[in-house]
Image (cartoon, rainbow, N blue to C red; front, top):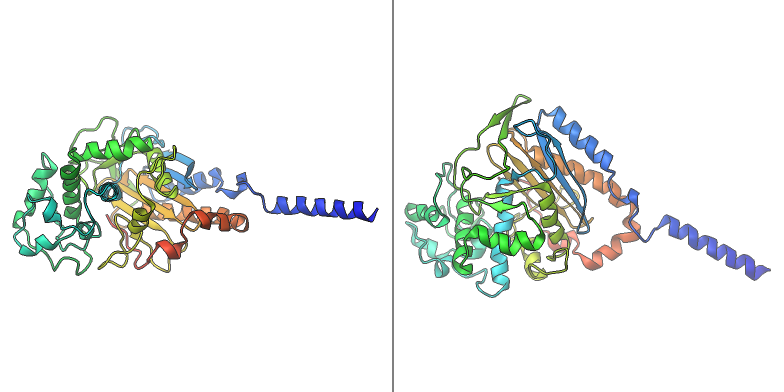
Length: 396
């Protein structure tokens, strides 16, 4: 009798434990889609923004993708609407270079001049610039304000011929789009493919990013890409993107849905949905780590400052008609991308929206912390392992 009673108590106790600590992710352990919808809709309405496209990833899987608002033609934005992402493109450029490093074709600390003899500057110090310094913005190359279009990336980097470095290579950080023009040309020379073809064959196709492409100039025609907006005083005005060459530095055109596949690969430690590895875990870790001369910038990623909670690995982008933000949150397994079809000079709305969504995910993450934190840490790095936070300034 006593033994039967004891068995019943033990069975009941096990049921209670399982109910309190479920082994699987239940519906209430992810942010409620309605809550995300309310937050984004309220934000864009309150700030007079025409539209946004959003994707949320959890543990390498897309759990929410949706468009809000409208484009310049009055059509509803969706998760499949083509949009520019500006400097968030640099993460793709850096990744392509790291793939070539992974294959042993180049090394991060090789000098650029050793692989690009066509590159010249009016400064003998340029021969000391390494590939790592280009990716981490510590090359000393200045950042011009006006950038005319070019017929090719090769033609574009010839503009550096009369330039001088701002300081010695590796001495300090200075954000410079030309660093990434040169990197795009490096990819072309080493791979033997046009830069846009390399991205397509080695990143976009393997990830199933079927709508994504890369262009050399903002003026290049792209079917399905609608005009963006400029906002001021709470009003959005349709605006034509300013003409410039931005290959490597800002030329990726994509959708929120495709960005979800890109972020999923990062949260899957470099593997796509089929388990195919696109890059080694060691190089992925290196890309998330602060580089010499740059305490808050990795290799194609920015690192959050200590006061930003939760810590995140990010990249933002902006052109005259768009703003974009991508965030990886290693501590929770979430990742978020926000693309806006407008530019606001006074506030980085894409960053603010992404941060708000991350806070929503933190509420969900806290509900499953006890059941899943240990398992997650076995598969992923903790923030202290992968981040070297410094400043929270976003790059464009």
